[in-house]
Length: 411
Image (cartoon, rainbow, N blue to C red; front, side, top):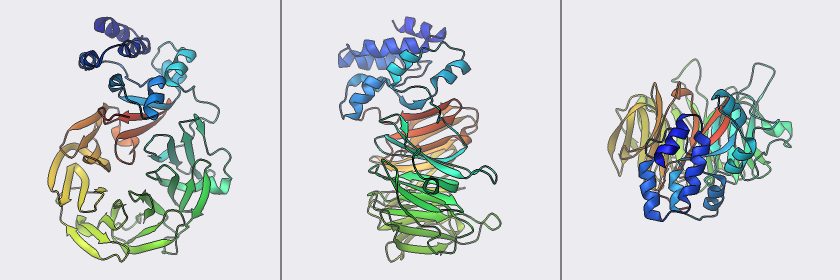
């Protein structure tokens, strides 16, 4: 049957073949499912998780045939994809399989700058850029549970954020935080709704003309860290790093320093890590801000960071690999430039892009996911809190896709 399915995929019936495979796997004992997984290594088509599996997985159930699927389309314009790929399209069959319909009138509009997601993949948050002087950047929140966009009824002053630079969803999935240049520079909503909790403006830190380019949560979701935008004229100018209460916006720590890229908090928000002058990785104790350790790194282009839950190890990503500094040390080579990092239960994970592919590796250098594409550096993506899944967004045809990095995790 493997040969039959592969032949079907080769002559344009990829979806039909995969649907047959998933239904066949449901009646197999576990040992035969494992054998089928091995037989399908190198499967030429997509391997999406059917909606009937997704519903069970979302309830915490597990079945061995779940491991056949490597991704789940949360939102997709299947009609446009079918036209682009010159393949037949059956709306009823696709909706039954994916559990979602084609793009509605609200659709995907604008050029997005950043994406954030909740651990359960229910919420996807996107921020868009401003288009000239006529259109402000905005926030879009997609609810995968209902298949709807949750920003339609939000007042314009709450939703439009100027130039959207970064967005994050709290580890428990209850808060969405966005950072932007000009207008409301940091703003936090509660979901579902979304209901605006607070907007910080410039927090009176002197960033009125710059705004913020990075936003993130502590591991417990109680604190937010934001980094002001770099000066376009002077990269050595100081930037403001602000730590605030996620529910109220009350500032608990702030400093002005020369910093590259992002800043991260540990699980409890008692350690803050950033890349300072000369590429040194600096770890501050909070809330007093005392510098407790300075790590030297020879990693070129260091920009991305991930901090262990205990705050005693920092993973830093740059050009050609990532480096662990602190209680654990080591260098992991990788092809390309690090675009994003996170800390999972088994250590750091990093997304690298080269000229031809995007690849996720773990702290041992194992490849967890890879995808060839025309311009990987333009890939819009984010890890879920905990790093079990990578979310990617494509605008044409519109698609939000969750790629499973932990195939052996039950539930």
